[in-house]
Image 1 (cartoon, one colour):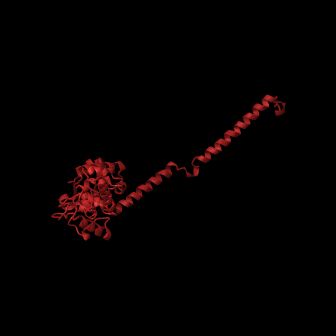
Image 2: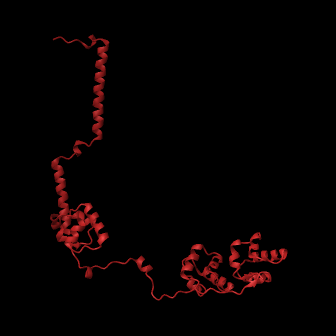
Image 3: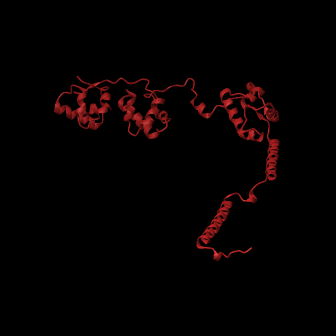
Length: 287
């Protein structure tokens, strides 16, 4: 049989053979590339090797079982369940049961909590202890709960009776602020309303709130009122309800406009703190 030389083929036939060879080389290259992305044969485990690894895992678990000490039926953890061959969903089901019932002290309750079969239970039974709730179990009380437990017969000290040392027991108040509060209270002759504590220089609102909680205003002072139209600058400032600048503004307003007929007139004084008008009425009167 005679074979024709490649050079005797026409141009279209030679082009077809060239494309075919090029396609074969492309397929070979792709197969090599894909094989590099897959797991090498040397790392792939056959059935015999996989069975050997599984048996070694079982042996390791059995060795850990020997070191596992018996534990309370109320303290099944993920680690203990793993050593005993229980799946994670058993522990999840057990924890949900504990949250609802709080106590597992019998075999029946343990089976109900875990949902395992009798066969599985007999395998782990040697490690389970069912304690007596009345003699063994004592619920733990956290430190946080002990801190908020009410103190019996606790004496509540009023804000007008608290000493500087007692005020320092409030978080945020040191030696300087405690003395400043006492000095301000003495200047007022005692707090009339608890909001006056906000006028103490340097006291933040959060600290003031803690003072109110620790030292409520049990016996507010009832001050003797003076006339806003007859008092002097010194008498007005001595009330402690206004600053020296605000006292000057009231006196100047009174000199320029005559008698003050209503506390609402103070709102028209430029530079006067409108928020103090309610507090001023505790010490001043209009006659």
